[in-house]
Amino acid sequence: MKAKRSRFLLGMLCFGFAFLYVPIILMMIYSFNYSKLVPVWGGFSTRWYTTLFQSEDVWAATALSLKIALLNATFATMLGTLAGIALSRLHSFRGRTLFTGMISAPLVMPEVITGLSLLLLFITLNQLIGWPAERGITTITVAHITFSMAFVAIIIQSRLAGTGRDLEEAALDLGAKPFRVLWDITLPQLAPGMVAGWLLAFTLSLDDLVIASFVSGPGATTLPMLIYSRIRLGLRPDINALATIIILTVTIGVLIAGWIMIRQQRASAQDAEHT
Amino acid sequence: MSGSTLGNWLQSRWQSIVAGIPFIWLLVFFLVPFFIVLKISLAESLIASPPFSKLLDWGDGGLPSLNISIDNYAYLWEDSLYVRTYLNSIKIALICTVLCLLIGYPMAYAIVRAQGTTRYILLLLIILPFWTSFLLRVYAWMGLLADQGTLNSFLMWLGVIEKPIRLLYSQFAVYVGIVYSYLPFMILPLYANMEKLDTSLQEAAADLGAKPMAGFFTVTLPLTAPGILAGSLLVFIPATGEFVIPDLLGGGNVLMIGRILFNEFNSNHDWPVASAVAIALLIVLVVPMMLYHKVQAAEARRGT
Picture 1 (cartoon, one colour):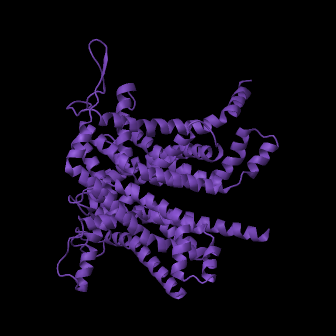
Picture 2: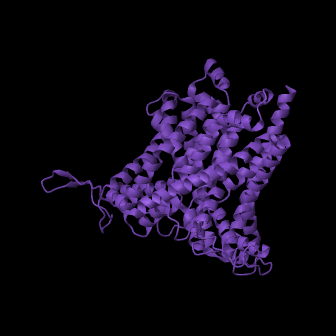
Picture 3: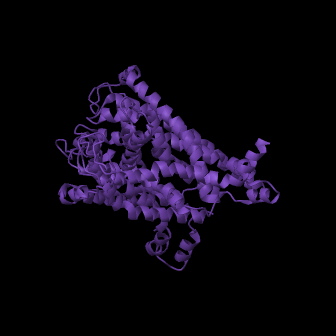
């Protein structure tokens, strides 16, 4: 009976991973297809990569997306860290219920609603105070910060929940002022969480199509917007090449991060054994 | 000394600063926009810039008159297309949630039972798609499902079918796309929940003679209910308002509300109706969203 269950679980695991990975792997293989018709194999070729590297609008869109992602990740990490600390260390302040609601709502809010509401906000603000004068990099960045800071806040909150308050309380008992405790003890403990939050915010921004499409103006096309406008009408071999580059970059990044995590986990497990 | 004054001020005010800055940001860029959407949804559509009527009109005598119109909502209710689309979106999201649960639950269970490094590697393989582009993963299915795509070619090679069957641009493709894209969102909360599970209860059930199936349904399943709920909501809520997947994989045949909203706004430029569509979608989702908020809050409390 037990063996039967294990076989079932193993089978589901294999099926699940095949489901998750076969489409991506096939897409990568077809990026090396000579044929212009994506699914018809016409021999090995790297011509679509050459096409891609020569295409200026791809470079421009990539640069814009990276710029927005960097700005977004930095600001979202700052705001999200403050929000995460507030959520887990300040238990009673006015508007806490509203605050927690505003943190958890963006995690599940359909993107079309967030996009539409932010666009209407920007238009209203423009009529009232003249800012933002035009829609583009600024409006996209502000929109991205708003939803990615919620993800950062959740990471920080769970990290703070995991680390005890012993150190903070000891410092307070020894007469350190609250702000010093926050700066010297809480924040350093949060550093790994902030790195994880920064990376997540960076990827969320690079990934977003819907919200950026709503709040962007003429002249500002992010990489997902460019990809979307090309694949709307069907398969494109150059997009297969672009997808392969993006996915390989991300995979290598995640694998390195994962490898570091596993090593740290092992090191701390060994430390625990020695003490 | 001004430095120490600033220091003192920070000292006494740090709590307000820590909570205040993100609070104000979210107030301005998250909460206020919803009221603007609500406001515009109650306006009338005009051919002007901006293309809607003013809610407050200052007449000649300086007396304000309020122009509230529920025409847009009446229009949504009367046009059977919108009602059908809302129902269809909910149906698709529900079925996809169940499918994600059926695939994700055994996967999460298997990962929790794996030991040491294997467990981390399996978990990493679940998280990896989460970090890679959503849009590109949907695009990958276009290549798989196209008329001359890999799946059709494979089935023809097997001899199951003689000529390509229509897979892309169908309801089926939308189901596949949503389950595929949202599966990690189901597995991760389930894994987080199962990881903390006290296995001694399952062992006790087995020791007391419970058959594996009975043990699963009376012990394991109820204990993992919070994970099931969190995962299901994380799939159901965004899937209901999904735009990219029905647009790229569904073709013109599959009606989903996220797509109608996007088109109403970007092609028809009917802002008041688009706003009403958004508010109606929010009303549909407000109960699951509050439920998710509760689950999230309970999870945060359990951590401390």
